[in-house]
Length: 282
Image (tube, rainbow, N blue to C red; front, side, top):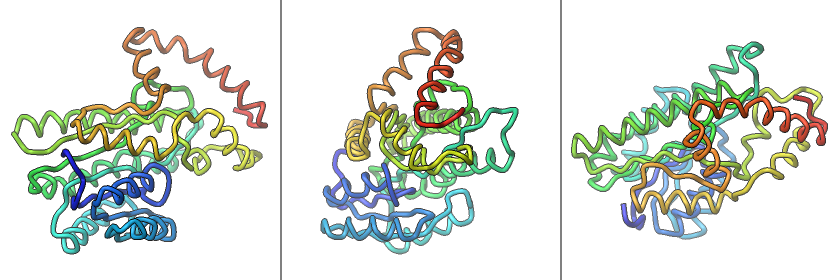
């Protein structure tokens, strides 16, 4: 996909963060947009901003964890737009919890949105993307899809699953000769609401404190992330790394192999000390 003019783009999690930034960037390039989020007010706001840029943008409420809802959404988009060229499975949530202490409901919540949401969106729209003749699927993983991190086992599990699913899909499209590009995206620290809205934050920790702490370690804005992702789509890149921290996460396991896990304890202790400066006890 060399250009985005008049392309129909489907974006989940478009109410904020990378999803909103992608919608606005595609609006500037003349795309027609089907935007979804579980937060109706937020996605309506994104659609309104896109329309001010001259784009056709329709907001939808969608819980990507619900398979039937995603398939119904695909049918609605098909009816409204006539087809689909680009799908960005972006909706995501986070959880911080050790395996021993993790609540099953929280584990299911992360997996249902972060992995199954990606699988649902891919399966529901893939026939349309193939039929477009110049289609592309973008699935958002994470740097936590490159390395296992203590207290992030559920998030790791979902994001590693997205990576494997997407890499297999890309090969399948090539073997079948379908005109579909497939890209797996691994963002590092991007200035979004994901940390503030995460589960597993201690009750005695103020969410605004979490926000300030997260902002200190983010290296990339959503707007920059959106530009990098779309550049990757144009070049049909298999993997897109966002931020210098993502390049580090990609390099470390390549250099150290499974021995990168030996870094887990000192890095975790370093993280605890940093968090304690903001009154967060891990």
